[in-house]
Image 1: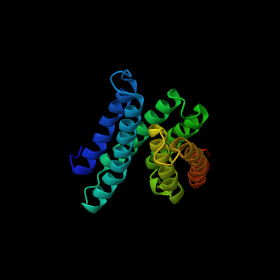
Image 2: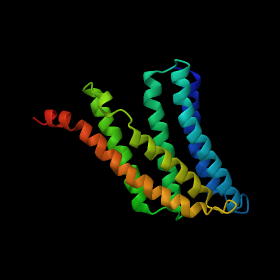
Image 3: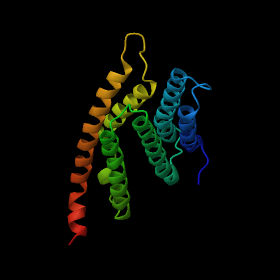
Image 4: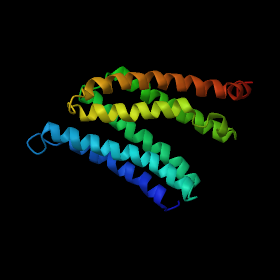
Length: 190
């Protein structure tokens, strides 16, 4: 395991997961709902920024590693899954939307692992639609965790629209990756 700045940022993202949960499960007399929303959204925004930053730094500082390439998407999926389940519990996201997003993440992770085992991981490398999905998802989750008016912006409404867009992009990107892997899947089934 390589201890470098990008990997430390990824580990930091994993450490933020229980902190996010603690914020929302503290009694309201200890931390009022508005404060929970502000702190929870802040934690998620920090996690989203480190998700981008660790990859950027790994490439820029030439500190990429196979462990980092494994850990980064795991940390991302753990944080997103935790946040989505929390949003379902808070009644800020429909459970079917969370199921679509989480289900796709599991399916594509399994597909990528299988493709790596057969030496074809480049065939299912992150696509533009995948990056667009991640961006919509991160912004939506941040807004839905905040869930309070921000000046004249209805964060719940915009977050809800964005999470639906993210769900559509989630399905679109899943179909994209499945199509890319289809020749290898057909070959393996012979």
